[in-house]
Image (cartoon, rainbow, N blue to C red; front, top):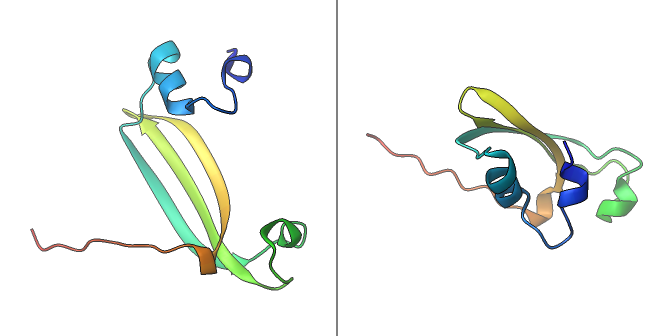
Length: 88
């Protein structure tokens, strides 16, 4: 409760969640997929209609409980994904 009144343009959401609410992310799952940019978002992303982009869904957890769900649409020509792969 009251999160809207407490968070501002120059504040850290995660710092606020930790200091006021005692919630800190322990882990998160992000899922990336490539799909068409929705028509209404194409001008905002400055891409042509029909362009493709990364559609990213992230769920963050504090222990077993999820506390954050975000959906992002990210231009593919402005984003790079690096995945370290190691043999244990």
